[in-house]
Length: 330
Image (cartoon, rainbow, N blue to C red; front, side):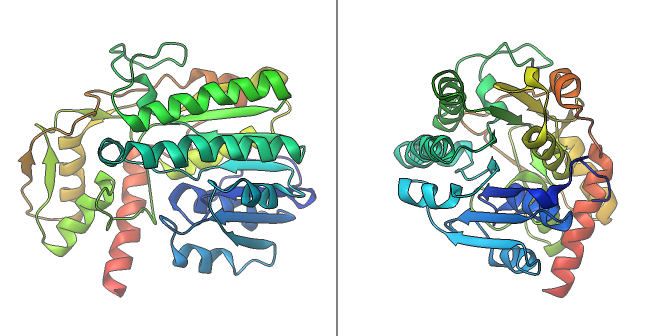
């Protein structure tokens, strides 16, 4: 990650990254620490967070860690004390898991989100940015996806993220909190977990091919996604936390590249790069999944100066190289 996503002197500011031991949050925290933020506090309950990410971050003297849960308001209050900017990444992901556990997802993603908003208001946080999801587009078929046009939710996970957007607007209107949300489109990259029951597709493909274990594709593989390298998510979080553009706050943005590729294409790209002879095993499509995904990113480009720094193929090569190193060492 060589490109700079900020122009302000970060050494003046204290940041909180919730879910900072996780995949996206860990990359955001690392960027802030590497660029001399005054303080970067991570709040994580370590359900999805990794100790290896904390070990990486703890090399920096400006790093602080609170092990705690966003479902506890007191913990959120403690985490927001003396903080200038919040990047709220803590959440439960996974459409299929949300269908299996809707109450749990609501508890973390909605109740935890409201706790964080309340704590941010109480501690006069300057700006609050948070992870929404492209899943809020639901059954709206039009491509590319534009922020103002959403459909009916297809899963409890999508409903929690849509609810986050509603609460963000309420906290902006009622309490004057400056809030910006991001509808992430299939974020991928190094350190993404390939081992969970609901792991994302790219680490699953790479792990399967490298370890010669069966690789599954849900449905016919013709479904398309706007695969977005994690550096792009870091960029938009940093730019949004620090923006002085009054027109940019209290909005929600697509975070993607603006190009889509099929899952079959992704499989072949991984296979070619790894020189694998794997053949995929097709299984039933997943409930709640949308068929095609492609983002219009012009709003983030116009108001936040967002510009994807890494496209799909370059990000895929970097990700595969990371996993090759991981598996050869482990």
